[in-house]
Length: 270
Image (cartoon, rainbow, N blue to C red; front, side, top):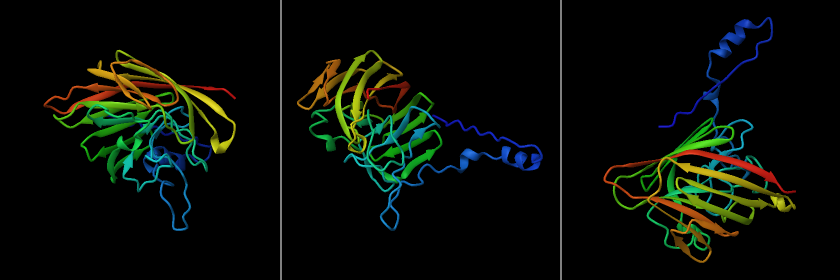
């Protein structure tokens, strides 16, 4: 089980030691509610904030995505996955690259062509968010737990016992604005690649994000896909509508899969 680490410190000016002692003994992080700003208010205004796992000034903002590519709302009941980076509180959709989704069974149709086929259903009350941590339970029985560090993150994915194979889907074809290129490679326990995005508020801005995903064990199967077909056992793919998946054979017991390390790096093109 992933447990979020909470740290807080207080700078005490001279002459106020009594007040600072009281503050230092309080867990300030426990007062933070990441869901603030994620609902629409009575005048139909939105904060467009993101509740996912993040650290202050970190590169990783691991948060749930709306299947239709719009901002997350607390009242949502489905997600296309958990993207690795976001800009919280923005007026225009941006980022949302590299959504990672846990599903049951092996993909049969290409996600870029049939995106709404691949989503997780949940109840809003089954979500939990704390500083640096987010979790949710899907109606399929899959439990997702995410935690973030400044430049990386870790996930624990608990699948129900028996039944279909346990799959991790990485769809690089979608973000909240526009994807112009992507590439992915599967080798052993690692999935590596990059995504080119941009056009924040329709501006001519571009960036490239590199990522590394490492699982606890070598998957039993893998494949890639584009907008035309799913390609089992093909480890490489390139293009604006592409992605990858890995699978683990289901057993009679509940399966726990961990993303041991997940790192991000970015390169601004212009």
